[in-house]
Amino acid sequence: MTETCSFTIDGQEVTAASGTSVLNAASASGIYIPHLCNHPDLKPTGSCRLCFVSIDGGKPRMACREPVKDGISVATSNAVIQRMRVQVMELLIADHYMDCLACAAAHDCELLKISAYLGMRPNQLTRLGKTERNLPVDGSNPFFQFDPNKCVLCGICVRTCDEIVGLRAIGYIHWGDKTVIGAAGNRPFAESICESCGECVERCPVGALAPKTPAIPAREVQSTCVYCGVGCGIHVGVRGDTVVSVSGDRDRETNSGSLCVKGRFGFRFINHPDRLTRPLVRKNGELKESNWDVALDLIAEKFRKSKGRFAALASAKCTNEENYLIQKFVRVAMRTNNIDHCARL
Ligand code: FES
Image (cartoon, rainbow, N blue to C red):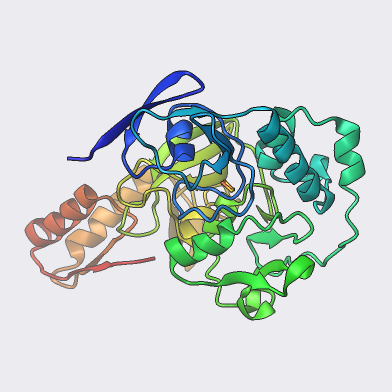
């Protein structure tokens, strides 16, 4: 049985499993502590220096690296911590290209969220945002782009690719104030070992790694990815009848929010104008659009005439129940064992 600790954050009673960090325990209880480099899926590194808290009135400590303890009293801010956070933010923003209106992450940017939390003034942000870096944007990947001018070096992408994907396709390049994030070997992403799964894009807190065609959906629908037999849980973002985004379902045990390149980015076939939505029947060697009654009658007639020359290929895009029915139909109705299945599409 997991042991738990009870303590207070800003006077609010909180209970968390022992070993949980103060930051993750606070987030799980709906208490906000500013942070950039922490992600609940990853090991903490304590690199952004924004999550300072005071424990039992003591000196500032990093909430992301501080395990919860029974009976402690955590304060998420005081005058010293507030001043430290503003200074860290000023340095970060000074090196960050602030084209917020054109940024894919503007609706969900941690940098903007923290500056609003700290009460930083708009003119302060604009003045500090005049970066001189002007580094080239890597748009070589077909699905996402990387703008190093927006990167805050939180390292979440590096750790995601290492700890979750296990590929280490992203790393730190150069040293000191020249440090940047980049694809391993300092190559364009498209020429690196990156598999385009987009796990780093999903976790980037500031829009440095962003989808090439970002779109904010009007609503999200819970569903299951249709690409293979794993059955990853997804949230399908839609506007009207058009699918505009797909993200992983963190509550689905099969994938815990992770997706592959096809599941995350390969959704445009759904509304593609070339997609077949009506049956085609061949007449005089030419495929002509028809209706389902005509097409199904034709199929039934051909099945009847097949006389032992019949085989079926089931699909990973079908559910288990549909695949069960297909093999039952082939074996019982068509009296053959010629049934196979493609494990992956
Ligand atoms: Fe703790 Fe960045 S979240 S130092």
